[in-house]
Image 1 (cartoon, rainbow, N blue to C red):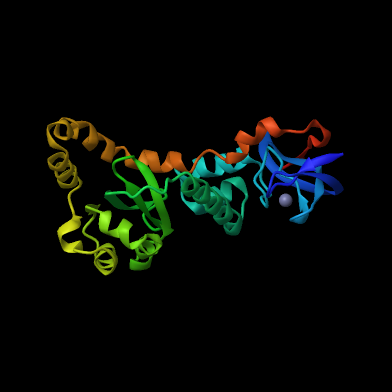
Image 2 (image 1 turned 120 degrees about the vertical axis):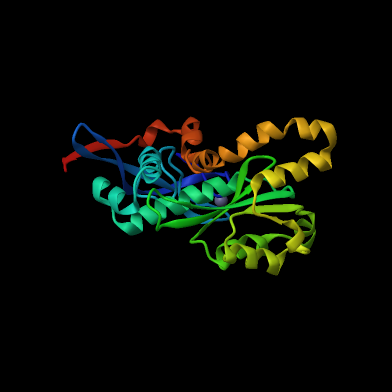
Length: 260
Ligand SMILES: [Zn+2]
Protein backbone atom coordinates (compact mmCIF):
# COMPACT_ATOMS: atom_id res chain seq x y z
CA UNK A 1 0.00 0.00 0.00
CA UNK A 2 1.32 3.46 -0.85
CA UNK A 3 0.31 6.79 0.66
CA UNK A 4 1.15 10.41 0.17
CA UNK A 5 3.69 12.20 2.33
CA UNK A 6 1.80 15.08 4.00
CA UNK A 7 4.81 17.35 3.69
CA UNK A 8 5.88 16.96 0.06
CA UNK A 9 3.01 15.06 -1.54
CA UNK A 10 5.35 12.34 -2.81
CA UNK A 11 3.89 8.84 -3.07
CA UNK A 12 5.66 6.76 -0.48
CA UNK A 13 5.51 3.20 0.80
CA UNK A 14 3.46 2.52 3.91
CA UNK A 15 5.47 2.04 7.08
CA UNK A 16 3.00 1.19 9.85
CA UNK A 17 -0.05 2.76 11.40
CA UNK A 18 -0.97 4.47 14.63
CA UNK A 19 -4.30 4.47 16.42
CA UNK A 20 -5.54 8.01 16.82
CA UNK A 21 -8.65 9.59 18.30
CA UNK A 22 -10.45 12.82 17.61
CA UNK A 23 -13.30 14.31 19.54
CA UNK A 24 -16.17 14.98 17.14
CA UNK A 25 -19.52 16.78 17.43
CA UNK A 26 -21.73 15.16 20.06
CA UNK A 27 -24.24 12.62 18.81
CA UNK A 28 -27.53 13.07 20.64
CA UNK A 29 -26.33 13.72 24.19
CA UNK A 30 -23.23 11.56 23.80
CA UNK A 31 -19.67 12.71 23.55
CA UNK A 32 -18.47 11.26 20.25
CA UNK A 33 -14.95 10.20 19.43
CA UNK A 34 -13.60 9.08 16.05
CA UNK A 35 -10.94 6.46 16.14
CA UNK A 36 -8.82 5.32 13.22
CA UNK A 37 -5.64 3.46 12.39
CA UNK A 38 -3.79 6.20 10.57
CA UNK A 39 -1.04 5.00 8.23
CA UNK A 40 2.49 6.31 8.47
CA UNK A 41 4.61 6.54 5.34
CA UNK A 42 8.32 6.30 4.85
CA UNK A 43 9.15 9.32 2.72
CA UNK A 44 12.59 9.40 1.11
CA UNK A 45 12.99 12.99 2.23
CA UNK A 46 10.93 13.34 5.41
CA UNK A 47 11.33 9.97 7.02
CA UNK A 48 8.45 8.27 8.80
CA UNK A 49 5.47 10.63 8.93
CA UNK A 50 1.77 10.21 9.67
CA UNK A 51 -0.45 10.81 6.62
CA UNK A 52 -2.97 13.65 6.69
CA UNK A 53 -6.57 12.74 7.45
CA UNK A 54 -9.35 14.66 5.71
CA UNK A 55 -11.38 15.21 8.87
CA UNK A 56 -8.81 16.87 11.12
CA UNK A 57 -5.72 19.04 11.08
CA UNK A 58 -2.36 17.49 11.84
CA UNK A 59 -1.68 17.36 15.56
CA UNK A 60 -5.23 18.15 16.60
CA UNK A 61 -7.25 15.88 18.88
CA UNK A 62 -10.47 17.32 17.45
CA UNK A 63 -12.20 16.94 14.10
CA UNK A 64 -12.40 19.98 11.85
CA UNK A 65 -16.14 20.22 12.46
CA UNK A 66 -15.65 20.20 16.22
CA UNK A 67 -13.03 22.95 15.95
CA UNK A 68 -15.44 25.01 13.84
CA UNK A 69 -18.04 24.59 16.60
CA UNK A 70 -15.57 25.83 19.21
CA UNK A 71 -14.74 28.89 17.09
CA UNK A 72 -18.42 29.63 16.52
CA UNK A 73 -19.09 29.48 20.26
CA UNK A 74 -16.07 31.68 21.05
CA UNK A 75 -17.72 34.39 18.99
CA UNK A 76 -20.79 34.22 21.22
CA UNK A 77 -19.46 33.52 24.70
CA UNK A 78 -16.41 33.89 26.92
CA UNK A 79 -13.60 31.36 26.88
CA UNK A 80 -14.69 30.32 30.38
CA UNK A 81 -18.24 29.61 29.24
CA UNK A 82 -17.11 27.69 26.16
CA UNK A 83 -14.69 25.64 28.24
CA UNK A 84 -17.42 24.76 30.70
CA UNK A 85 -20.12 23.97 28.17
CA UNK A 86 -17.97 21.91 25.81
CA UNK A 87 -15.94 20.39 28.66
CA UNK A 88 -12.63 21.60 27.32
CA UNK A 89 -9.48 22.80 29.03
CA UNK A 90 -8.16 26.29 28.44
CA UNK A 91 -5.09 24.84 26.75
CA UNK A 92 -7.23 22.94 24.26
CA UNK A 93 -9.28 26.03 23.45
CA UNK A 94 -6.14 28.06 23.01
CA UNK A 95 -4.74 25.54 20.53
CA UNK A 96 -8.01 25.55 18.57
CA UNK A 97 -7.78 29.35 18.42
CA UNK A 98 -4.14 29.28 17.34
CA UNK A 99 -4.92 26.90 14.50
CA UNK A 100 -7.82 29.10 13.39
CA UNK A 101 -5.60 32.17 13.38
CA UNK A 102 -2.97 30.30 11.37
CA UNK A 103 -5.54 29.30 8.79
CA UNK A 104 -6.74 32.89 8.52
CA UNK A 105 -3.23 34.26 8.11
CA UNK A 106 -2.29 31.68 5.52
CA UNK A 107 -4.93 33.18 3.29
CA UNK A 108 -3.46 36.66 3.27
CA UNK A 109 -1.63 37.77 0.16
CA UNK A 110 1.89 39.12 0.06
CA UNK A 111 0.75 42.32 -1.63
CA UNK A 112 1.65 45.59 -0.04
CA UNK A 113 -1.37 47.08 1.76
CA UNK A 114 -1.78 50.86 1.64
CA UNK A 115 -4.68 51.41 4.00
CA UNK A 116 -4.62 49.58 7.29
CA UNK A 117 -7.14 49.39 10.03
CA UNK A 118 -6.18 48.34 13.55
CA UNK A 119 -8.89 47.12 15.87
CA UNK A 120 -9.05 45.73 19.32
CA UNK A 121 -11.76 43.20 19.53
CA UNK A 122 -12.93 41.02 22.38
CA UNK A 123 -14.39 37.61 22.62
CA UNK A 124 -17.83 38.35 24.00
CA UNK A 125 -16.69 39.84 27.32
CA UNK A 126 -14.51 42.88 27.44
CA UNK A 127 -11.45 41.33 29.04
CA UNK A 128 -10.06 38.95 26.47
CA UNK A 129 -8.64 41.25 23.83
CA UNK A 130 -7.04 40.53 20.51
CA UNK A 131 -5.51 43.03 18.10
CA UNK A 132 -6.62 42.69 14.49
CA UNK A 133 -4.92 44.40 11.54
CA UNK A 134 -7.01 44.58 8.37
CA UNK A 135 -6.26 45.62 4.82
CA UNK A 136 -9.09 48.07 4.28
CA UNK A 137 -9.03 47.91 0.51
CA UNK A 138 -9.33 44.20 0.19
CA UNK A 139 -11.14 43.61 3.46
CA UNK A 140 -8.80 40.87 4.60
CA UNK A 141 -7.21 40.18 7.94
CA UNK A 142 -3.42 40.57 7.93
CA UNK A 143 -2.52 39.97 11.54
CA UNK A 144 -4.09 38.77 14.76
CA UNK A 145 -2.29 38.97 18.09
CA UNK A 146 -3.16 38.47 21.73
CA UNK A 147 -3.91 41.53 23.82
CA UNK A 148 -3.83 45.17 22.76
CA UNK A 149 -0.32 46.17 23.71
CA UNK A 150 2.38 47.91 21.73
CA UNK A 151 3.92 44.49 21.00
CA UNK A 152 0.61 43.19 19.69
CA UNK A 153 0.80 45.64 16.78
CA UNK A 154 4.61 45.91 16.54
CA UNK A 155 4.75 42.21 15.73
CA UNK A 156 2.87 42.92 12.51
CA UNK A 157 5.01 45.88 11.48
CA UNK A 158 8.15 43.91 12.20
CA UNK A 159 7.21 41.40 9.48
CA UNK A 160 7.05 44.10 6.79
CA UNK A 161 9.89 45.09 4.50
CA UNK A 162 11.07 48.70 4.39
CA UNK A 163 9.27 49.11 1.09
CA UNK A 164 6.02 47.74 2.46
CA UNK A 165 6.22 50.10 5.42
CA UNK A 166 6.82 53.05 3.12
CA UNK A 167 3.83 52.04 1.00
CA UNK A 168 1.44 52.41 3.91
CA UNK A 169 -0.54 55.59 3.35
CA UNK A 170 -2.90 55.55 6.32
CA UNK A 171 -3.57 53.56 9.47
CA UNK A 172 -7.00 53.86 11.01
CA UNK A 173 -7.20 53.06 14.71
CA UNK A 174 -8.87 53.86 17.96
CA UNK A 175 -7.11 56.52 20.02
CA UNK A 176 -5.16 53.93 21.96
CA UNK A 177 -1.60 54.83 23.13
CA UNK A 178 -0.16 51.36 22.53
CA UNK A 179 -1.21 51.35 18.87
CA UNK A 180 -0.01 54.90 18.36
CA UNK A 181 3.44 54.20 19.76
CA UNK A 182 3.80 50.96 17.78
CA UNK A 183 2.93 52.81 14.58
CA UNK A 184 5.25 55.70 15.37
CA UNK A 185 8.10 53.30 16.05
CA UNK A 186 7.79 51.47 12.73
CA UNK A 187 6.10 53.57 10.05
CA UNK A 188 7.84 56.53 8.43
CA UNK A 189 5.92 59.81 8.90
CA UNK A 190 3.51 57.97 11.14
CA UNK A 191 2.01 61.16 12.52
CA UNK A 192 0.68 62.11 9.11
CA UNK A 193 -0.69 58.64 8.50
CA UNK A 194 -2.47 57.77 11.70
CA UNK A 195 -6.18 58.43 11.51
CA UNK A 196 -8.51 58.05 14.45
CA UNK A 197 -11.54 58.26 12.28
CA UNK A 198 -12.08 55.45 9.82
CA UNK A 199 -14.16 57.63 7.55
CA UNK A 200 -11.28 60.07 7.33
CA UNK A 201 -9.18 57.25 5.90
CA UNK A 202 -11.91 56.43 3.44
CA UNK A 203 -11.89 60.10 2.40
CA UNK A 204 -8.14 60.07 1.88
CA UNK A 205 -8.56 57.14 -0.39
CA UNK A 206 -11.27 58.92 -2.31
CA UNK A 207 -9.00 61.89 -2.94
CA UNK A 208 -6.11 59.79 -4.09
CA UNK A 209 -8.24 57.83 -6.51
CA UNK A 210 -10.21 60.64 -8.11
CA UNK A 211 -13.91 60.74 -8.87
CA UNK A 212 -14.33 57.02 -9.23
CA UNK A 213 -12.85 56.45 -5.79
CA UNK A 214 -15.11 59.06 -4.23
CA UNK A 215 -18.19 57.35 -5.60
CA UNK A 216 -17.10 54.16 -3.90
CA UNK A 217 -16.89 55.85 -0.51
CA UNK A 218 -20.35 55.04 0.73
CA UNK A 219 -19.80 51.38 0.07
CA UNK A 220 -16.42 51.45 1.76
CA UNK A 221 -17.83 53.01 4.88
CA UNK A 222 -20.27 50.17 5.13
CA UNK A 223 -17.40 47.75 4.56
CA UNK A 224 -15.50 49.20 7.50
CA UNK A 225 -18.48 48.57 9.74
CA UNK A 226 -18.71 44.98 8.57
CA UNK A 227 -15.05 44.35 9.27
CA UNK A 228 -15.63 42.48 12.48
CA UNK A 229 -17.79 40.01 10.60
CA UNK A 230 -14.99 39.50 8.09
CA UNK A 231 -12.57 38.87 10.93
CA UNK A 232 -14.80 36.17 12.26
CA UNK A 233 -15.20 34.60 8.84
CA UNK A 234 -11.48 34.54 8.16
CA UNK A 235 -10.83 32.19 10.99
CA UNK A 236 -13.72 29.90 10.50
CA UNK A 237 -13.36 27.22 7.88
CA UNK A 238 -10.87 24.49 8.69
CA UNK A 239 -8.71 23.62 5.70
CA UNK A 240 -9.19 19.97 6.40
CA UNK A 241 -12.62 20.22 4.81
CA UNK A 242 -10.96 20.96 1.48
CA UNK A 243 -8.98 17.80 1.73
CA UNK A 244 -12.12 15.67 1.81
CA UNK A 245 -11.42 14.63 -1.77
CA UNK A 246 -8.29 12.95 -0.53
CA UNK A 247 -10.25 10.71 1.81
CA UNK A 248 -9.07 7.14 1.66
CA UNK A 249 -11.66 4.58 2.61
CA UNK A 250 -8.90 2.26 3.81
CA UNK A 251 -8.76 4.04 7.15
CA UNK A 252 -12.18 5.54 7.63
CA UNK A 253 -12.69 6.13 11.33
CA UNK A 254 -14.90 4.20 13.66
CA UNK A 255 -17.27 6.17 15.80
CA UNK A 256 -17.44 5.64 19.52
CA UNK A 257 -19.95 7.37 21.76
CA UNK A 258 -19.81 7.79 25.49
CA UNK A 259 -22.19 9.45 27.96
CA UNK A 260 -21.21 12.93 29.08
ZN1 LIG B 1 7.95 13.91 2.10
